[in-house]
Length: 98
Image (cartoon, rainbow, N blue to C red):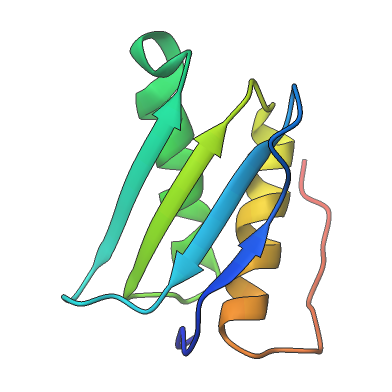
């Protein structure tokens, strides 16, 4: 999936995460995380964002994430929503995974 424009999903409320996805200046997925729990959970949050984008077929993107204590399921959902919006997709392929 090709990212063609900037898009945002999520809020800055407690227990949520705001994800901004935009076209990348360089090949690959670059993630910038701002989180009060970055020391403890930063690597895991970044991994969830990266894995979600890869599963969606995104190869090039710049991501800004502002975490307020979101669970993995919220990180995945916000990442997917922002990516679909940034790709200009209106037909979402939502699915539930164990």
